[in-house]
Image (spheres, rainbow over the protein chains, first blue to last red):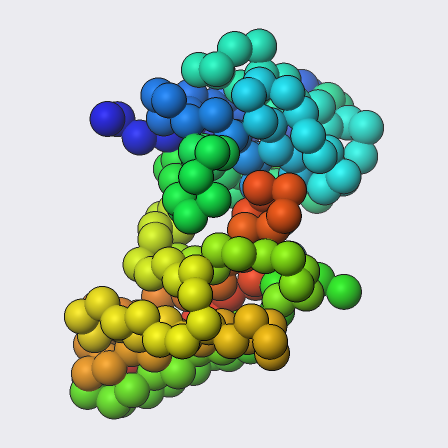
Length: 115
Length: 110
């Protein structure tokens, strides 16, 4: 299996622009998680989906952030408009929901820089 | 209160020594606990998982779980320079989500 695939790996954008991050989970996994990692706050859970349905988005920092999962093999995290404080590494992870003892598998992350 | 707390360190140990990493969690209903290692610029990767009270050993790594105290630890024996990384404690919550601590930075000095 190719693992969790994220794109792009790096994104540099200007303040005010829209940014879309993409994620393809491991085939067969039915839980998907979006995290943001910064030095100050560590790895923060933004939102997670079970069977393509958003379960908890309480970690989404502001209304500028939105996430979708239109099917089992694709998810997006959108920031509109972007701000410099959104600069961070964004990770997508997937897991098997029916087995509580399975771990979360991470993608390589997207390093976002907003200037 | 954060769901998962770790000592942020940094922690430095000499090569060959034992490194001890600690973690506490707030959700008493949690059943699954994980230790991830993250090298600089890389994504977290799983090194240990534990589900029952007691110790679980895998090579040089031992995970310890005490659900009554809501405490998880990781011991690394015979520490090697290649163990230098950030170690993240993760707890799988009752809602199936994974919460992570802020990580402990470990440096193994040759």
